[in-house]
Length: 149
Image 1 (tube, one colour):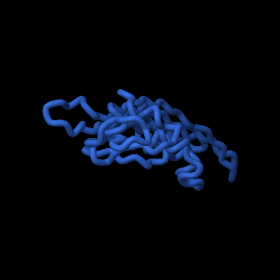
Image 2: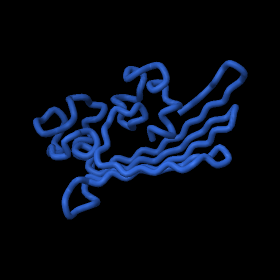
Image 3: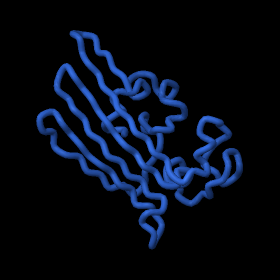
């Protein structure tokens, strides 16, 4: 998501965290840490680059618990840029929004939760899986560039 769609997101370009999607729930602005990640990025062929990432869950004997995986692709051939991505996060309260990997998934605002009291993301405190699908693009007209995510 970060590599292939972050370049089209205003928060990454010039707006900072204030212009990111609410609390960067989709991680376009790269505010959430991914532990134990294995990542692959292809060479660029004909303007197309693709890649994927897999984060080991960190639970001995259970490789699918707290795992994170993502795939994406990018096309870059002036004046057109385009990108797509998919993110799948198991147990997001622990594996994605928390850095320690051991906090309990409890309701937002309750001790043990990795979420604050924000109603924007409080529903993710007990979610089994977070899935994000995104697409973005930009087109340049001389010195001006227009884009969307």
